[in-house]
Amino acid sequence: MIKKEDRIYFETLFPFWEKLSQQEKNYFIINSRTMTFTKGVDISSSPECFGLTIIKSGRIRVFLSSKEGKELSLFFLKAMDIGVLTAQCIHPKLQVSINLHTEEATEVIVMNPEAFSLMRKRNSEVSDFNMDLIYARFSEIIEQMETALFVPLNTRLIRFLLKREKQEILMTQEEIARHLGSAREVITRNLKLLQHAGCLQVSRGKIQILSQEKLQSMID
Image (cartoon, rainbow, N blue to C red):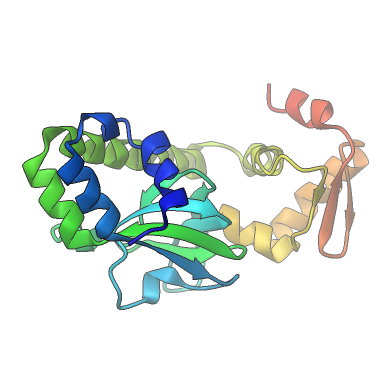
């Protein structure tokens, strides 16, 4: 059961909340709990089912990985986002292997998957919300896959840097390569080109954005 002050997340993020009966609201509250993960936790390898999840703080990377160890980031879950961390618990027929790693210390609110499945079956508003959530995440995955297949790497790299929304990005070139499904050598080469263009400054484990406007102009 979640704390009283955490109920604001339900009221804010669930569009169906005010349409629920008090009994249904209590059912959500009683069957939810808070959890914390340290940085670098592989949530997807846990035998536990987490179900519907609200991100209170932190950041979770959702990505695909190949047998050869190559990775491709699909999307990120951050504060005030909603996701299903282990979708097979709620949708057993969904056979998709997706990895979830915490990029920083993360706190979440998790609803019991069996309880959420029951609510989906009993309440059409909850069922519609669930389908909208699945559609939104699936659209993100398709968009990312299309980008990986058809958009040049230098453009994807610039978009990735701009999406971090930081002047100083504390990441190694190997980490960036994993995010973009590329090789470190290719990322290094492209970063050097952007550095020569005066867009950024590269140092060990850090990228300093000098001009977001220049970066944006290169992909407009």
